Length: 369
Image (cartoon, rainbow, N blue to C red):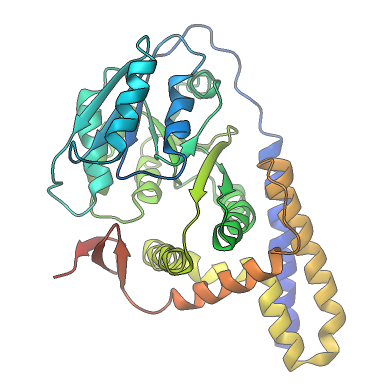
């Protein structure tokens, strides 16, 4: 019972830390207004027709900003995203935009190759890399550019509000992103500073990318966003932006969603093995429930755990990300996430965009033979 009490105490401490970290991030000062515009190159790697793709991309064309360009990259002209891009380029002729065909990538990480091709064509030194499923407000460029008035800053990563599709699996995953994931993110930054980056939106000075050896330095890592921030932090200041973007995760069927979660879990374990073990403290409800089955006298403590978990979820999701918490679904998401955390300890292969990859112990990946 003594060990169980220590475990419960660990969960409570983590919840309190998450609440404090979220409040600390919420108090982060917005950047001062720009004294003069800083030109921004926005890079959008594309592959296929994501749900809501046209509206996602349209939000970048409609930036209320004087000087920016949009670059899109796909492998082949037959990609179904191409007609969408061309339609938007025709609808917004005043916006500087370019569509690039990369061909087959020479290494496993196709996204990194697309970013490399766009970087070679980009005209400006402030580089915003945003996934195809991201949607922003018209003030994205002006807010991000204002942050880089601090000359010490080399790279920022934007937290994101996950917006679910219609499927129940999408809704559960969005809850996890808006509560568990960002609680861990803000807590890690509070404890040790920003030594990493997270997708789906990263903004960096070109000089910061050059300092770490170029974008191709992360071509062998599945979690290229995490490694990009980690490597950049050796050379420049890395921060978590106060600007929240929307991550439109779509509506995957159960098997697709499970494969996606398992890929994420295995990738996290390989990228930061000790941190992955410590992730157990982000699942207070399912572990506490298991403990109360073993020690029925501990049932009252389950209420304390649920309260702390609820406050942490509300603080991170509602107060910071402006995403309401679906309270009835929260326990089911916690149980499902805990199950995939356990599953992440097993296996070293993943399925990604129709191909099978092997994950190495150092977080790198290679195509399976």
